[in-house]
Image (cartoon, rainbow, N blue to C red; front, top):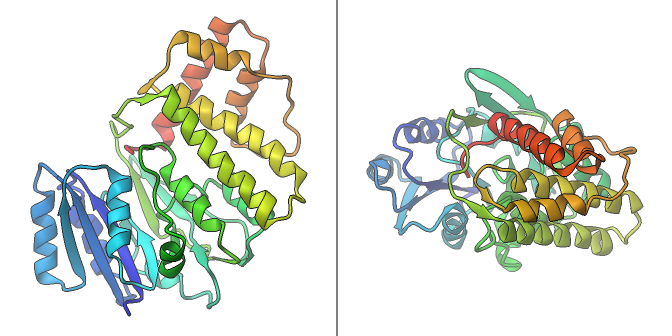
Amino acid sequence: MTKISIIVPVFNVEKMLPHCLDSIKAQTFSDFECLLIDDGSTDNSGILCDEYVAFDPRFKVIHSENQGASAERNLGLDNASGEWIQFIDSDDWIAPDFLQNYFNIGNGYDIVFQGITIEKNGKLQELTINSHSGENTIETISRFEQNNVLGWCINKIFINALIQKYHIRFPKGITIREDLIFTLSYLQYVSAIGITPKCDYHYVIRDGSLMSRPRSYREVDECCELIFKLRRNLVEVNFNNQYKNWFEEEYVMRKLIQLKYIYYPQTIVSRDERYSFLKSARGYKLKNIKLPKTDRVIFYLFHSLLPFFIKDRLIKIVALTYYKSHYKKK
């Protein structure tokens, strides 16, 4: 059996795709198959996929109609034969030891995390994981959230047998935080988590690469509902409901996710819907929950006593600044 199945959704990335695929070919760990899922590309991406398949038998391509990244990743999962699953975005790249890092920490883990290097305008930012390998605990997952490394599927390696046994897939009809939903679904069945401090995945943010497809308030709300159903299940089932602080964090994280997407420029939300949401704020003071500076500002504004039109305007400015500095197209 092949050790690792790498799944790469591909859509109109002819300029970036060679760098991505060359970085996969250059891996020091060579026991892998790379499944290129061409999502109906209208540029030369599909042709490039065929060329790599012709010259390297480890590469395989599936050409499909345009369905979106989640459907293409699911198609990859349906065809993966490897013991482990690794997702890579087609406009990112990985350092030569990226795959090998997973196996340098030993065996016995159900999932292994790595850090991420974010590239933007020639500048690099490493998101490292301040934790150690061990059991699947609330403390471990909380640290992942605080370090902004939980909600990605690209910096983790998953056991294929677990994915297939419980039919874990990316959600249909939801294009917000689908990586996080997949990861939380998988963590329901995890006992031991492995961690390597390396940051050999390079997540590239390019100018003008923000989300282009409009989202509705309903989609944002459905996404949040699913995320926190999964988070709550982790507490109640896996951790015997012993961690009261988790439910406090749940409120904070849920509101932050809703706020960021409600105020994202491509989200279709009426003024009345924003007013109703901001009106739902209740008196709350952050205690021991650590948040990045921008999240803390947004959360403070949400609970402030400022008039609606001022609060509405300020949150919109802060949220847009956040997205311009953190996100590419999804």
